[in-house]
Picture 1 (cartoon, rainbow, N blue to C red):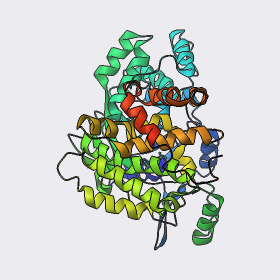
Picture 2 (picture 1 turned 90 degrees about the vertical axis):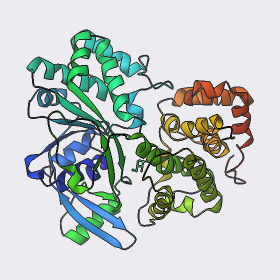
Picture 3 (picture 1 turned 120 degrees about the vertical axis):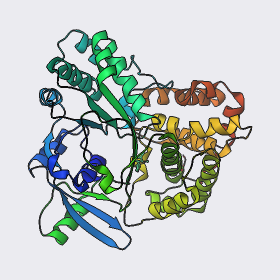
Picture 4 (picture 1 turned 180 degrees about the vertical axis):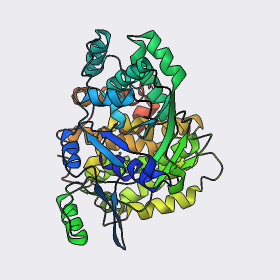
Length: 439
Ligand code: CS2
């Protein structure tokens, strides 16, 4: 589920590199962009992965997607899930698509969740609109067809993402069919993963670069960095491609890897997204070149590192590699793209570090600075893209402490009641102000 650039530079790319790739094919369903399936289907699912480094570009045609489908074609999705040969469902549906509230539970009041639950309950469920609604319907069909167990592999940047996916799917299923919820519990393995490969949105210039270098017109290439990483934890009861051939790691305990990636990479990304845009920058590489942003990142990394425990994490080397990856100036990774859905992302990227620092008796100032930058950004940006955009807009009409309490409450209700934290965030609100930029 999900046919975006990241799915194609990561899971589809890993599947192509697997030694047994000829035995596997991916049917990829779009989420929010039906046109992505149309363009790819017209090319028989083939597309080019452009690996872009400071040294230059390399090109590879990926053949592992054998079917590109508009996600609204729920009938085809359900048909494939009911097929015993289907073994794995990966999810790259964005963090926000899990419709979690600040407690990490399914937000059963979100309007599209309510609508899908009504459809499913009425058994007139031909077209659930949310990815989770579609997955629940597909799993019901698999149970009815007695097609056996399978693995759901969450590839979105959420802590303990397998459990999150399980809770959301089982939560939705149990709302209308307790038997289905029990079947899912017994037959579906929810695999947790930490995924990593920086993949910005494709531009027209990328299409031209592929045409010039390869001599064919690919309407849907993907540009990505050479680095790639995939750590997985969980069972695959119906088998899986040999992703380890491309370097995927299968581990018993995923949390340390997940935290390292979510806090150091994604945390720095979100910090740069808000601080960088407030200071007039457009891309990650530009923002990192600004000493004020760079220092804020280093301080946040110090706080995060103090709370990363586990063997073999090599945090100093990981940080050094991140500076190089972020500094790849040939990859224009737009801050505006990263800034989307901040209320969901910060729950995973800033809040855990802030909480861990406070629990250790320290201030958590660097993590609070990220939240402060987000809060200022939400008040100044036009057309904010966030599942809580309406609530954020309402909060920004409030004044002083009430405003910050309302914003913090969307990230973590408990933090919002801690006056020490609201004061801290308030005191950091001017950190990234540039004269003339905030009016
Ligand atoms: C980024 C991620 O947009 C974002 O929120 O932080 O997409 C990031 O580029 C990937 O997780 C890198 O693996």
